[in-house]
Image (cartoon, rainbow, N blue to C red):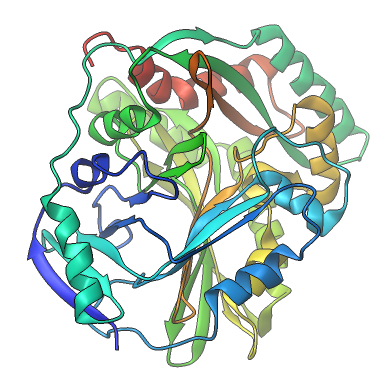
Amino acid sequence: MTTLLAAPWREPAHVASAFADEPFALVLLSDGQGERGRWSYLARRPSQTLILAPDDSRDPFAALAALIGPARPTHPDGPPFQGGVAGLAAYELGDRLEHLGLGRMAPWPDLACARYDILLAFDHARRRAVAIGPDESAAHEALAWLAAPPAPAPAGALACAIEAPAPHAHEAAVAETTERIAAGEIFQANLARAWLGRLRAGRRPYDLFARLARTSPAPFAAYLRLAGLALVSNSPERFLQVRVAEAGLVAETRPIKGTAPRGRTLEEDAALASALAASLKDRAENLMIVDLMRNDLSKVAAPGAVEVPELFAVERFANVSHLVSTVRARLAPGRTAVDLLAAAFPPGSITGAPKVQAMKVIAAAEAPRGPLFGAIFWAGFDGGFDSSVLIRTAAFVQQPDGWRFEARAGGGVVADSDPAAERAETEAKISAMLEALTDPGG
């Protein structure tokens, strides 16, 4: 039986800062809002790792299932994740499912994950930390992580240079895509723009993660360190979740489609949110992805078990408001979270509809995405699963002149999309990250 050891509360981002430069250090940081944002996690020192480079011919989903191993019970009083496999599924992992001949963003792998037998969980609701291990000795090892002194947070701007994308290029791509939609090729495609930059000497990717945690908390923030690589995500979007219930495994996805900026006053904010909720364009954009995700879940769901309990809910985040819908299903007997991941990857909200043709349109308009718009996930020993869509994310590569990064922001293009409005939407979405990178006050 899994062992849990309770400890006084510590801010998870502070605790993780001491270990952030270790290979396979992983932080899953929630915003503490409600039951969805209740738990954060710190995992390190994995017992096994799995990295699949683009030329590795192994079946990634079979390899992932083997690394997780057979399902086993966890502690009934513990958090949802009590050990298992966690890591990155890059966007082009989908090429192994659809065989589109997609390029790759060097040097990122298609899949990078690890088996974590011990970890720390942070309960935002009860303000306590929980050390988790397969036995008492292992749990005490995780408990000792809380005593490590946090790394100091640097002051001043983190980036020394950021290259912004040309606005006219994105507007031209949006216009071309609306023409392809009018011709009947697709219904929607999610197009993104790229911002490139380099960190100042002495700065590290985790500094951006910690700063975003302070200035722009998100429900699915994540940090992953690999050899010479790092990923910083401030995502508001859940991709797939699987809960272990008495009736079997219950899957849920919460696609985001539809965006509005936050207002400067309460009245302006309420008006913008109301306009977003009433927007026919945004509701149509959201509904297309809901239908796509219903189809993806139905591939592994029990017959008649897919439902949409919530449609077009407005959720507010630090810089923007979004339309969010919920799709839920009970998995068919014998199906697992890994089967669900294979059925639904890459996320519909960052591809489009129909998914395969939208991916072709995206590939013609963008450079390979690599980890951007992929997913960070955990797969528990008990069969549970959770994951985020890697939007609001920066991918870092360590080079002789320091850490270079790329971040992208995009939006769903539909028949009546306005190119200038789509460009402005990407700038609203990337604004919190750019501010965290460039703020001279730190």
